[in-house]
Length: 149
Image 1: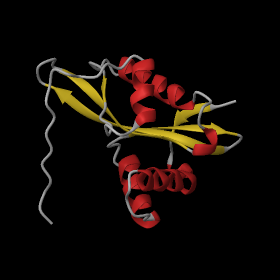
Image 2 (image 1 turned 180 degrees about the horizontal axis):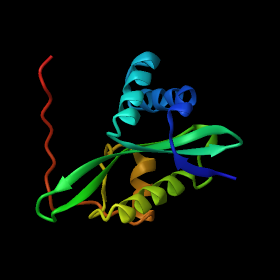
Image 3 (image 1 turned 90 degrees about the vertical axis):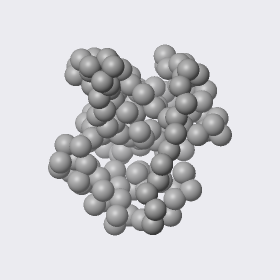
Image 4 (image 1 turned 60 degrees about the vertical axis):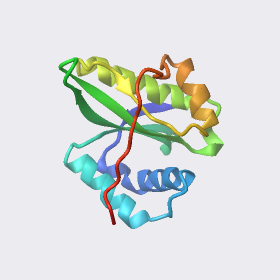
């Protein structure tokens, strides 16, 4: 049975490995030390909410949400920034359980909702999100600006 709960600092050894696998999935270089520092800061500074999926005391997936605010709606909005399930645990509905917990957080915090971004080539995600109630936003253009090195 899968248990979905909020991550704590006690989860760091397993969470760091999951987070690193997630980053590698997105073509980033493995970096466990920096991943640990990054996650510890998010948790200790309460800058994000991380939910984990646990089976038999093993973390098999996670989602990380960051708070945003909508001036037009005058409400909080949650950015579902990260969602990852280990390949061996996929196809069991764990991603949907993590997303449903994120939706519950939005309701609990009286937020306007959830927003997310994924690559156009992420076939799994692009098939998953509509099945759990997300709609692709065709009305807005999203732009990025990256600080110079």
